Length: 130
Length: 148
Image (cartoon, rainbow over all chains, first blue to last red; front, side, top):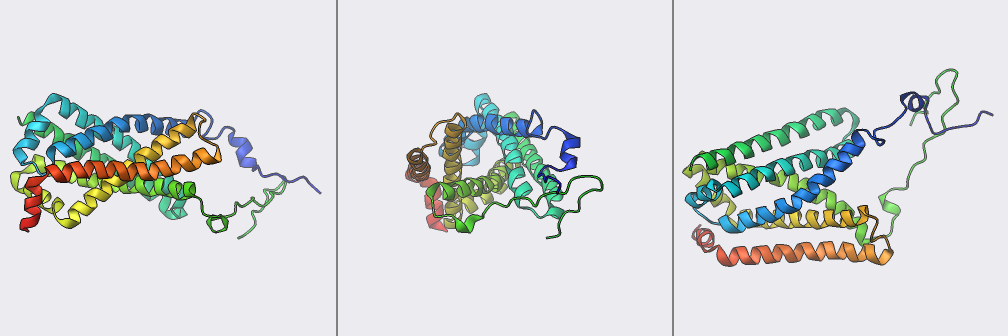
């Protein structure tokens, strides 16, 4: 009786998987890098929310007209966009049925890019409009 | 499920071992928190739409901004905003908990349970502080709410 193995022949041919110095490591690292920057993001968002809650448009324009707030807001968009893109990839890969996996991975990237472009452009317009 | 056919000239594959699934586990707070970390992450993902629509409306026109603001100031809008805030706080504290584990701390049974409950109560506390402050200072929007 031949000895059995869990390892497929394909695995042996391909050699290293994504976990060893490959995209898996990059994903893990970038997710944690942006998790740290998102701590500052949350602090700034809470500050923004409490400053602008119920405020008229003039106050909002003045807020984003300040360079510090404009820069911080754009950093918010960048940090959250990367984190969102990497984060949503995980449940899509794990729970989506086979045929829908790739379309939803594409959709994930598209959604995040649209949100990020809308965010950055709006912030720039409010900043430059002052 | 169909057995995988071995490729000619290779050893046959053993059936893959299957892990027992959700239903056989006894309830543990950390397993609920693990699920909630995913759920809140997905919620925050779509919650970003609210922030994007809000900032885009401010950059578009006074009318667009006032329309979006008035929707956010409705009772339903406030419930969504408070829920979004809690989701962000929960995901943030959950992330910190994962950082503690990433560096190799907090794996004892009591530490895991403490970190889990701390995440849950911490997120509720932070949300209460933020919205307690917001609602007590948000006279303009509250009167807007009352006027509707």
